[in-house]
Picture 1 (cartoon, rainbow, N blue to C red):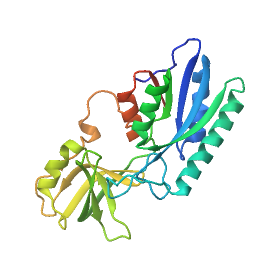
Picture 2 (cartoon, rainbow, N blue to C red; picture 1 turned 135 degrees about the horizontal axis):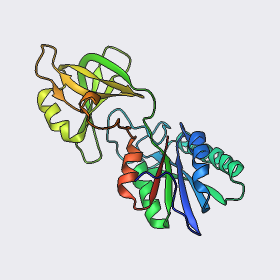
Picture 3 (cartoon, rainbow, N blue to C red; picture 1 turned 180 degrees about the horizontal axis):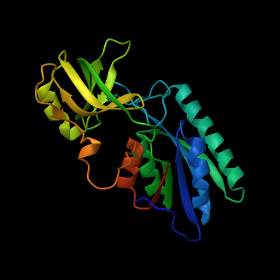
Length: 250
């Protein structure tokens, strides 16, 4: 659910979710929604799979990782510093509002949703994710690996395009079986899609000789109705798994 204003009521407890890339923006734009809040908690979640200090929206190129017993100090330190700055910004904007900061580690969407349920937050405010410009891209390369989600389903592949690092190409898990039947590791693939941050969001994948393309995501021109705003993984997960008000900060 997306709301223009969180519901009113005495004792309203709000959770503000930030990451390394959007902390200042989220806190600044969240402040007007907190007129009726009596308490605010700012949280930054570090992905358990991000062993080199990535932010909450990032995941490793090789997909599912074993759970880290200890996150790299740089990851936790970055999260703690992000929270500290975000809390300071919130206190400047709303000096009358009691605010504290926390860090979490695990799978960010799941950890945030669990915190909301356990502590009874009335509203969650978080960045949409994936709000940067989408750059159309056409590229060809050789499949050199696969990406899987935490259920073990394929949701991406690694494409060797002759550069230092492979390109991560993503598709939804329900298309993973079709993509896996069409292409094997070592085969050449042509990808049409858009670049979103560090990965490519695939619309179609096809072989080099003009074989029938496999549709991954529906291209925008096939969408009906008003334009859609693509959400990041954490925003999608939280909006689907919490029952309180959710405000998505653009």
